[in-house]
Each structure stands twice: as C-alpha cells, then as structure tokens.
Length: 47
Image 1 (cartoon, rainbow, N blue to C red):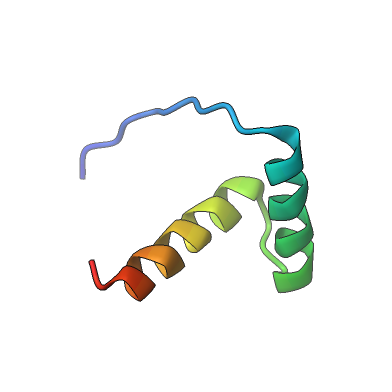
Image 2: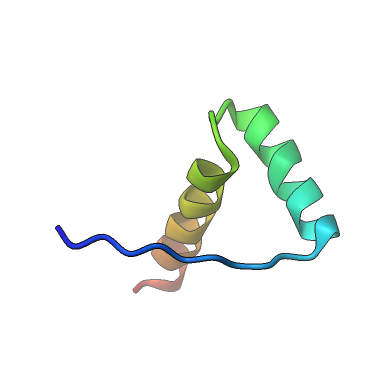
C-alpha cells in the first residue's frame, strides 16, 4: 500500500468539535477520529 502524508488546516471551532467527539467515542487520536468521521460520511452518501 502506498502511503502519502497530508497536512491540513482546520478552523479551531471544528477541531474543538472533533476533540469532543473523540473523547465521547474513545478514539486515541484526532487523526483516527477525523478518518472515522470521513468514513461515516462516505457510507451515508453511498460512495
């Protein structure tokens, strides 16, 4: 599997929401949480 590094900037208010979700769901890192949320959104969109 090819890997690639990506650096993204998010508004602080969005990161605060991600951190709250991370703590509620028990994810270890913010990155895990963001990828989980992306996957959930893709599943809901049917892609």
